Image (cartoon, rainbow, N blue to C red; front, side, top):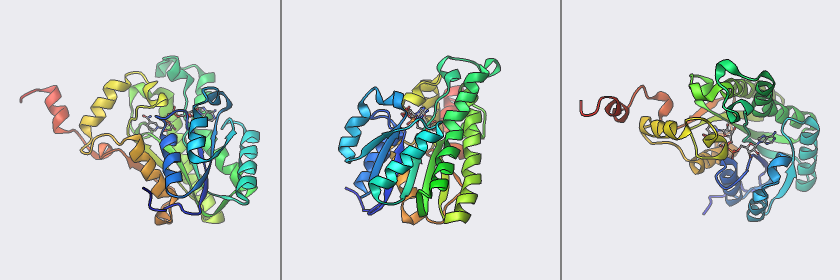
Length: 272
Ligand SMILES: NC(=O)c1ccc[n+]([C@@H]2O[C@H](COP(=O)([O-])OP(=O)(O)OC[C@H]3O[C@@H](n4cnc5c(N)ncnc54)[C@H](O)[C@@H]3O)[C@@H](O)[C@H]2O)c1
């Protein structure tokens, strides 16, 4: 049962690929909290057809858009404004993809065309989502934009290769656009730095399962689930966080502030 936190609000949710996706859970929560939403994903992701199930559950329209394509994003916002009869109150950017990770390339042996693709899909698209919205005046006063990041933007995790660079750019865009959109229209922009989560994007990363267990043991609260992340996203779309902007917010059960945990020490030197 919801609390009506998003009652009367309208928004765009990208990145729901299947029921494990963080965006999938966020869409269900947004609906539960009283919002009207439009779902979007890359045309290629639509082929799986899973998103149709979500659209039915959320009573939402789907607008296909490649997040790297400005014309597609213009079409997305125009359709949203037509459907809602005005601007949107929130936008979720839940998009990431690295061809280098998919193809198992190490950081010292990156394919640079793929590297550009990783940055374009996973970071520049965040800028495009906001620049297009600003030009079309598609986000309402006191609106909220959220992107999803990972702590590899601050610290090195060898398996995360070029996605670490993409996330650092994503977080920087969050700050820079947060300043600009805040001044222009009181729109706030934040990124959530989420725990490792068992989704298509997450599990595609080499060594994910071992790392997931490690993070679980390092975090006093354990890993934050996709559903927990959805709750946090909703709080950032709600009016209770109106003055939070330009932040990268760790949502990781305490992982980012833990030096080493007793559990991990015990794994290294059992019984000592
Ligand atoms: N899963 C994790 O461990 C984890 C941890 C921290 C942050 N994140 C971030 O969370 C976000 C959501 O990922 P997820 O874990 O829910 O995985 P997911 O695979 O379910 O979602 C990624 C989405 O990106 C979409 N996408 C890829 N290329 C696109 C394009 N060109 N245009 C539009 N959409 C495109 C995919 O279709 C998919 O829906 C990503 O930014 C990811 O990096 C994930």
